[in-house]
Length: 386
Ligand SMILES: [Zn+2]
Image (tube, rainbow, N blue to C red; front, side):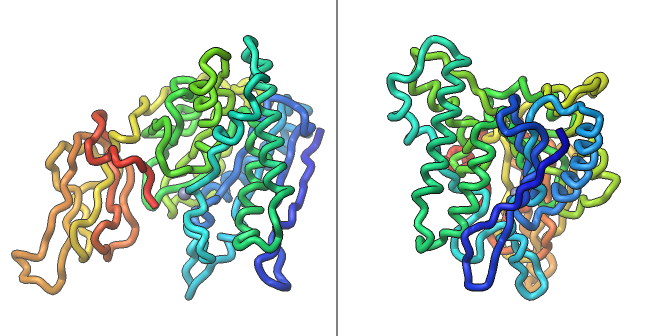
């Protein structure tokens, strides 16, 4: 079957406007396994847009050869609302300018409302339980969409979220393509999917795989992976597998947008789809992984202690020791000998990301260092940045 394309119209936010979601589907809607890939939920994170453009070319060719064996849904841009948020020449796609907050935070926890409807419907067979839970997830999201009043404040954003969720919620694999500011390739997952997801990290050349059972931020990826682990904990007498491997893929940094990188990343995603039974054909041997997994609470998020100009002392990929100076914040108005405030690593580890804006205010995240020991200051309940 060749690709089918749907255009879904979001509830409007203003008279005379209309926003569309585009969905490309390979395979029939009932076919399993099902993969869902989307780019730029944070709409100003561009690399994934180009990666999915290249992946669609590869999948079109595979479809023409009759090699699609599962169902693959591609949203080449996940966030038409954020794509339109240009202010004074700058694209601001992380937060909803209409007051709806970060586009990748505060996603619904589907496990709570589902638990009641599942009572009495689960049994001893994990595959049957998976079917029952998938059906309940689909029905729950569809019900929320039907019940959404068009005059509700923020209806366009809620409609947007529910439409993405409707396609992702019954998938076996969800890959949400983001990027950091300046960063090495990395991925976020729940621990239940490690080491199962090692092929994803290896194919993409990830330098870190960051694990948290519940980051506390309500990210898109966790909305689809954690219902399974939460329901398994809620119903210990019934076997419930972690049936949706959902990951946030950070495609390096914002500036890492080129056909060369995107073609290679799309080829890696294609091989992941082959390895996991969505596309026929031999992906070849798995590359040597460049990283193991790290706990997300072992990642030191270094923040600017003062306003000023950021002068880095380390590069991406450097290994630092606890106490090393990662950057200095320079107060241009101070006497030169008193102008510099150091930003110091609190763990040994790899410099995974840096900022791209060099005038910073207090609290700005200036770097992430991937360590191996949980950090006490990271146990505040929310491991993700705003
Ligand atoms: Zn993002």
